[in-house]
Length: 275
Image (cartoon, rainbow, N blue to C red):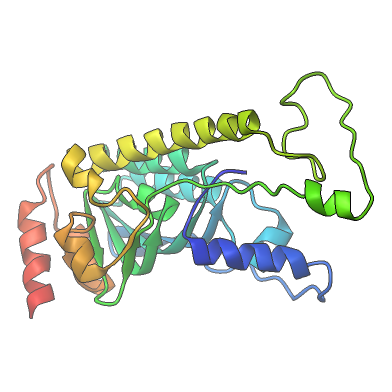
């Protein structure tokens, strides 16, 4: 599985996977609806680990949100004539690459119909930032963290451990890549290169979306492409967000913005941030 997710969140997921078969199943709550209304503004909550069609276990243990449901919420708000603006309320470390381009594309398409503003409550990392970058403007709380632009996957070469345990794994397959990553087999340089090329392809899509959505050139993107995370004030200086504000202010602004230009909105919210 390919991930666009901040490292500490990934570590937490791996830890939960390791213990999930040893703990009692907690009572499940579906959590908040992905979309609510504040006057004529739709507020869509994008929180937790973002996944495509997460299972019940993934919802419970990883706090997963379904990107398909979120895509439907964005599309519905874009089509609703009573809604004049959309706010994405984001608090997420990112998630799987699968489902992210579709949700980001829905945000970009909605933004062609009506203003879409993104608000970072505390964290918009990796896939969550990919999605946010397609909004007309991105604002954050004073203590928010933004960035972690990158794609990752992990493979584990357990061949030495199996060898020490006296176990020899013999793949019976139809090609040298078919059993790549099979537990107990050596991960070859060719296999590693194959997966690296896939990760790089996903990153090119991520890069293209952010550069287009944020109006960045190669030099500007070069400052943020190495998976750094930035405090809100630094995120603003490197062009990842447009200002520091509150959710209430961003919702109010989303109801005011008209046309394609948001320069006035950026100025108003930036003045709020300086107050």
